[in-house]
Amino acid sequence: MRYHVLACDFDETLVHKGRIADQTLTTLERLSRAGVKLLLVTGRQLDDLLEVFAHARLFDLIVAENGAVLYDPAQRTREALAASPPEGFLERLRARGVSPLGTGDVIVATRTPHDVPVLEAIRDLGLELQVIYNKGAVMVLPPGVNKASGLAAALDRLNLSPHNVAAVGDAENDHAFLTAAECGAAVANALPALKEGCDLALAGENGAGVAELAEMMLSGELDAREIPRRHVLLGHREDDSEVRLPPYGQGLVVAGPSGSGKSTATTALLERLVDDGYQCVVIDPEGDYSEFPEMTVLGGPDGAPGVEEVLGVLESPGHNVVVNLIGMPLRDRPGFFTEVLPRLASLRARLGHPHWVVVDEAHHLMPAELPEIAVKEAEDVGSLLMVTVHPEAMSPAALRLADSVIAVGENPAGTLAAFARARGDEPPAPPASGKGDIALWRTGSARAESLTLVPARTERSRHRRKYAAGTMSKDDSFYFTGPEGRLKLRARNLHTFVELAEGVDDETWLHHLRQGDYSRWIGGALGDDDLAERVAEVEEAHDPGDPAGGRRRIVDLIDERYTLPAEPTSYDPDHEDEDRPPA
Image (tube, rainbow, N blue to C red; front, side, top):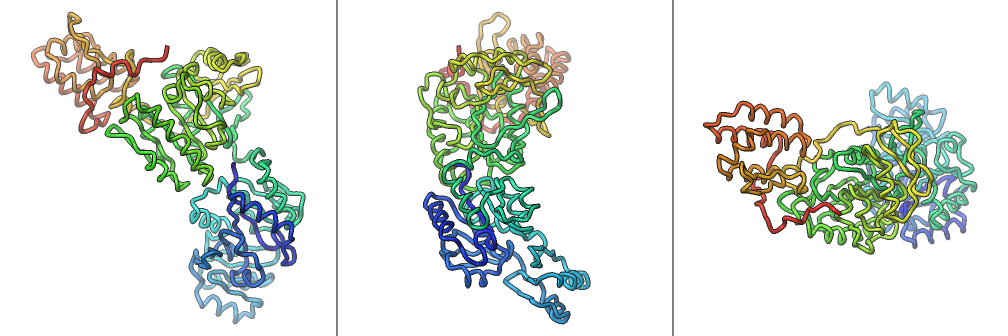
């Protein structure tokens, strides 16, 4: 379910001439029993509202005074969300004969044409106040206080996200909170400007329109409706037209060879989702996302987080999380994922978030041998993004969740064909133009299309944690063999490399130093050309009589660029085959 909250305006939206229709009331009661939270968001003063509206307890929270007051009907508690204006301001308005003149906990209210003396008093007294209009009503509030800010305070109280809110209104002061909601709707009697700018224009007037929206939520029709302004930018076609992805219900695979740009595409999507306020959780087996900005990293080289710790942080929709499993043995990672995925689905069923679950190295966490996975639809976790080198090595149950594939690298047609064969589908025709840097295939369509990815604003230091303390594949590891090949000491990361370098004999160390093996490995397997160049300078300038000096300089260069944990993981030959690439 996409929408967990219905937020509605009061006058001439929920009620008409102060009365709520029986059908509207019945529909809202059904919606509440279905687990949807109901919020009333009104410009009225709270005491005035409670005097005329007998059904306040139907709502989980009430935002009154146009966003300035939060009221809990069950607990009968009220909270002012801003400061009251100074008494001198009210005295000036009374002296100018402003009438009617209402005051609430925060709001000062009158009607046009008294907005003129109101504005003059604000100017003359040098006050930082704003004036908001609502069909002839004039509301004076502190800056930044409106229905959107009040809605945000109510959602924060409930640990809910605006991306799970459907909101409905009719007038000028409803613009802010309709825009803040994932879907903003206008009843048929709303002002033309509001109907033109909203996501959904309802057929019914007043409470009938509210009931119409509630029925759409109950039936799932609203979940299926696309909200174009919420779509996330992916890239551009050759004609420069945009390609955007819906933020809900997406099953997406990003696939391609190592080093081909999977992380670049994934990072670009993640950055835009986080910027837009969607809660994202990344299951990160190898520490590739630990430097992603604006995300809380749980786990690291010293140990993986517990499932309860992950869920505890995600309770608040403002927290995005990277679950770093680099400190967990390879054989234990699929089991952890199998445990955490249904718990994420359960959290979403209760609170509506997280909105996106990103699974890196998906072929390890959801291998082909796995007959079932813990979710049946991508919607169970909002949207699901799976990143893999080997789509053919993924569980068919996971592949069936995908409705789109992003292929990166020099042979996107081959990657898409591998995905299609693994699902039992016909491979798509390759893109008509290969000028882009990614290919997008929407499963079921006959042809993939070539796109130019819109990159993230900033490049992160890719794989830094993985190279420092993770487990690199056999092909990418460094091997100390010595001049006669007597040894086969595998450095599966920079940690182990430093540890072994300090322990091997001088002859072995110098053998690889003279051949430039260290800089070649760093530049090739790690892709760090800058460090490789600096290590090559040490190799070229080495003093055969001082092998310890060369070691120290190279170790210092590595330590300077890659912050190594204080207690490196010791080499464990018993796990030699755990990271063997899929056949």
